[in-house]
Length: 122
Image (cartoon, rainbow, N blue to C red; front, side, top):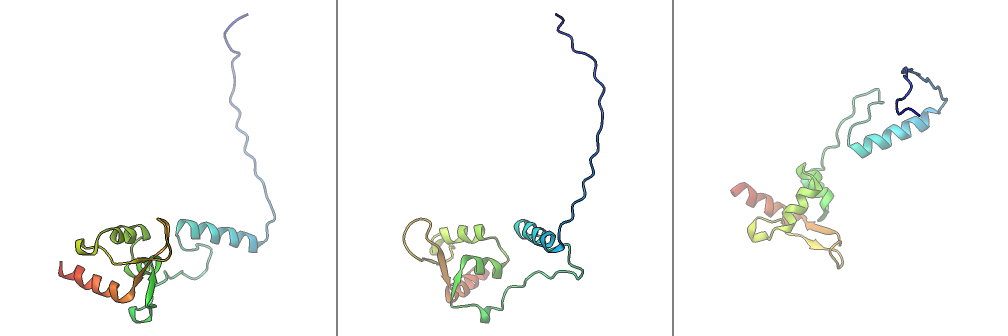
């Protein structure tokens, strides 16, 4: 028995497949993918407009980290980094809703305003 292999010739096969999928399903899939990767929907005929944060006066008195992040145009991760710092070290004052390390954090609107003013002075 020989250890050599028989010579081979590469063959390219292109498959073209056509499926009839309703537009509603395609749009749902595209919207879901766009939402997950954070890009505007490219299937719309009109240009999409990025959602602008609400004016400060329209924000609720108690803010989620997502609302703070949207208002400051920062990531939630960056907001949590500011929250982890002690306020006397430049940290953003916040409080937990519930107990445990995974309890959601909230920020008073007045604390956010004071923190922003302090950031301007530094």
